Length: 352
Image: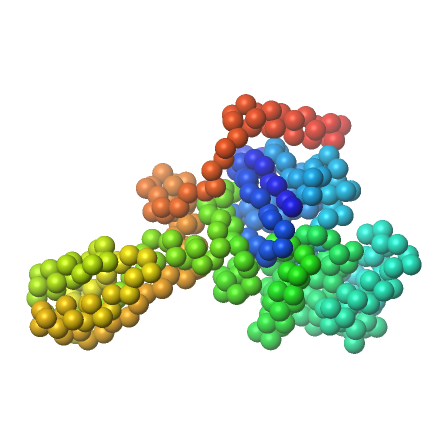
């Protein structure tokens, strides 16, 4: 569906996107994550043909966005963070205007606009001026213009920013419904939203891809994703010795809480292993009562922080904390050089 190959974008001496490569498959909702300044919006703008890349290429349904922009853009519907609306138009006027820009056949425009308004629940607002709509309904209009023409790919940049909780839920439900006929790429700072909506997650930091997987796998494979937190009373050596003999325990960390006079203990355990019962009997046998026990589940937010903080430390020369690796680039150095030269030559030709 979409191939991003060795994408690089520089603004003067600032490297916004750094040799970024990934593939988007059909029929999924992708979450595109990264801290501010990571290169998300720049990448999206390049993918939609809004700005050019310094080097690299974007292939959409077999069409290079640089070499065949018109054919490539027909496959994309785009909702920027600030919807491109004409406030003095009514909803119906604006959508008919967009339909004309997208070269939808004149005989099909009325029916397509009506279908999209029904899908996005805008029919009751069709004669209202856009400037008189709430922010939530303006987002709906922006989403409607992205869907017009039924492009295979819909790219949404922060579609729920500034909305109230009710509006956020409504937009999320609309996005989920798009999956049936479209591939969706969603950029958001709200990690719970990505967790609830997306099938697959791409995380970038400092313009580089640092992880790509399903939300479940990212959480499951994260460092310390499966651990047990306890508060135990007794002698430190006795507690540690009893816990280390339990099958499935891979690590024991202990610190003393002088106020409660208890040992705060964290057990790292093997994937998909429930050792609570074994821990209970081991502590009972050692005469070390358990005052508290809870399983710790790593969230997508924890994964995000681990990955982006690791890249931050790496970029400043400090040891990287994250154990994650970006998607491996299997292209040869010769191929990279040829692609870079080709994109640079094309860009110079366009500018001239």
